[in-house]
Amino acid sequence: MSDTQERWGIPGTYVFDLTLSRQGYAINKMCNSLKFDENREAFKADEEAYMERYGLSEEQKQAIRERDWLRLTQLGGNLFFFLKLGATLGYGLYTIGAQMRGESYEQFMSTRNVPGAT
Amino acid sequence: MGKIVAGIGSSHVPSIGRAYDQQKQTDPAWQPLFDGYEPVKRWLAEEVKADVVILVYNDHGTEFFLDCYPTFALGVADSYAVADEGYGKRPLPDFPGDAAFSEHLANHLVADEFDLTLCQEMALDHGFLTAMPLLWDHDETAWPVKVVPLLVNVIQHPLPTGQRCYKLGEAIRRAVEAYPEDTRVAVVGTGGLSHQLNGERFGHINEEWDKQWLQRIQDEPRELAALSHKEVMTEAGAEGGEVIMWFVMRGAMTERVEEVHRFYYAPMTTGMALLALNNSD
Image (tube, rainbow over all chains, first blue to last red; front, side, top):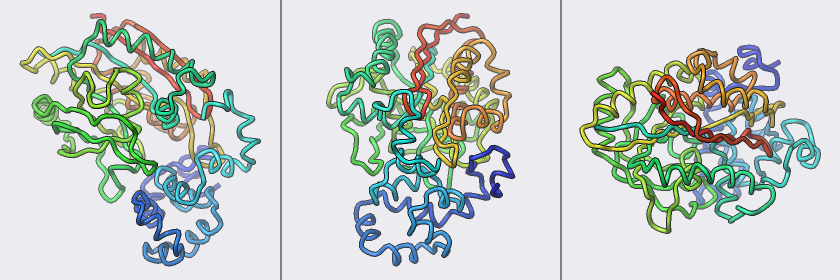
């Protein structure tokens, strides 16, 4: 269990409290900037330089390089902000979610009541 | 004098907005949802005839950032823009505000010890937008009601308690009833029901809990509002914790309420719910 899970005691859940928000502030600030098209273009043109500009830690950068959404969450990334990174890179909500569950997209969709309602 | 004429609880899910914009009203996966809102839309248009809607919502990293995050924020403007959430702006008209009514609310609520952040500009994302076109007909340029957006922090803990939200609703009722104009006010609490969008438990929904919620918020709202965030999130998912926004609506209603309509549908990752209430005292 990670620290945030120990604080809250809800398995498989990373409650976005101030501790996690502080840890992930650089990630979320960077992701928030991606609401503007010119910034999305700048990120895609040079991911490393863009991450450096926002002061991400090496661990945070690595999670983004690997498109590891669960790790990014554990390091303080908040989904509402990193969805903008997902949109920049072509990862939608359900793709990100399936990965966090450790499933393929198809496996995840097969667990839903009405998979057509996307 | 102002009067609260309807209380609505409604989910706010981005996929509903997409389905609406893509005109999937008769798509088999979406028709139940749109049909579920129809009776309430008719009731609001034909019987309720509200002048102003106080809509309780949260922003999703669109207008507000973590550098300075309000716990409660009230719109006090004469108009509110539809936000671009990064996928282009939805084809909905911007919203007319009612600055005079907002100012009255702000004065009363702050005097009543609710120290709100007050916003002269507030671009509205799906937290606000989802329910509006399902509840009120609009054309290309106009809405039939004015709006007052009321934001609650449900993103970054510590969140306000459910009880605090309920008390804010009670204070809103007092403020509305002290308004000198004969203004008819609908209060909409949005969010939920169960869903989780983070971690290994992504996709968690709890249909049984959701269905109980739709009854309990009518019959025993204070007991429900006394649940801790941890208790709610354990059952309803981390993001399901946002159901506290329904307490603002419920607190603004009378002690006893009459159910006008309820609808529930959990197709994908969120328990989508609609509850329409009338004051019965």
